[in-house]
Length: 104
Image (cartoon, rainbow, N blue to C red; front, side):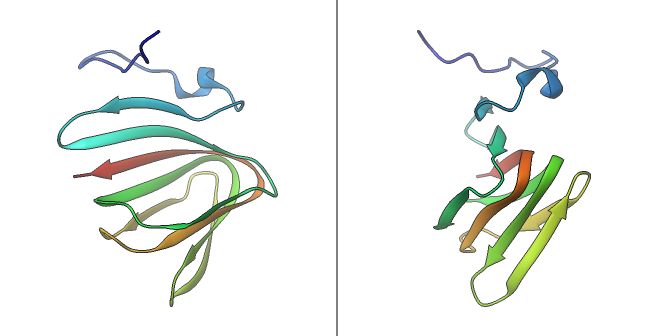
């Protein structure tokens, strides 16, 4: 079964996506949006993203580690912009959901 991506003009209720798993929302040549779930105590290993990107913490709390720049805590409602190729990791300080948007 093909993964459903939102079409232009199609509303997506992020709260209804739950907290069980991450969900790809849309991907085009210009950007990608992902509803990212990070459980408390789990981590995404340090990595780089091909484009500029933003993280909007919707629920919970995470720590974003930036190589050479320390750690940044994001609480529900916080938003973070990072440049293309900036190495970072994400650790769930508690169960969290984030809206990840990558610009290509």
